[in-house]
Image (cartoon, rainbow, N blue to C red; front, side, top):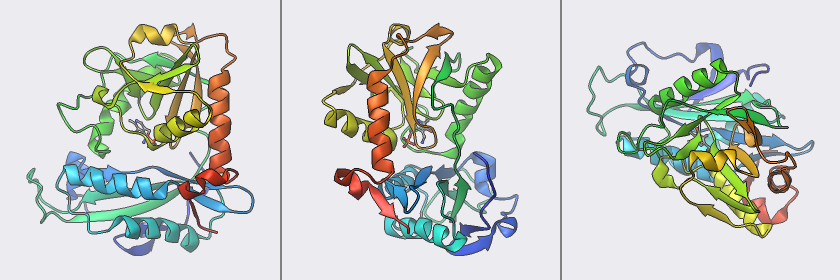
Length: 304
Ligand code: PMP
């Protein structure tokens, strides 16, 4: 994602010029990854700007913080208001990726986070561009396993957890693939470094269960509804590595990536390339995000 940086960020309740928004090197989150973050998308459809599932993202941010006893003083409504406010303050009328994050501020080197630890909240807007080729990508199964939910809570979207995604991405790119797929500790497929994974076989769609350690993605939840509307069932079940190679279609879902077809896994071409289930889900998702499907108007928060 690139493009001109918006002038203001939001920090602890104030709009601050981006160049002035800095934190001390003693910030706890810099040392231990004690930050929770969200990725949210807003879509400009030529006349309106809508934020997609803002309420659910604000709720997940608060939920992530709770796993680590982080005392985030802002309610879901206040977080949502601040996100909308960032658009208005920056006078931006284009699709953006929105990054709210809360982090433990100056708290020494103490590992024991209590309600007394100072928790700060920041929000940045990043003009959106495509992170992957919408026509489809290559993926490689990583030798790095997804961190276990027995090690740290996998439903908490914490900065520190993303080191796992970073090593897997480095390895995938080194081998010429666009994205990494991580297996869980039992050897089943879990998810990609920043997306959930769905496999289509004989017009049935399946996806790894939360017990694999996959994040409960908001795009994945949207896909379940869209698939239901199309009369296609989605089942959460263990996905073996060889289910990937034998799939008719595979797609990844995430806020930043959108819904992205997978063309090959470890160099093996997937299906016959027709991707008709994936295409119809992508069309349904685009209609919703562009504000063209009234049944899903409740998923959109209008900014302008
Ligand atoms: N898994 C991981 C590890 C992610 O980082 C993301 C992106 N937030 C997802 C899945 C997809 O989640 P969502 O659809 O809520 O963006």
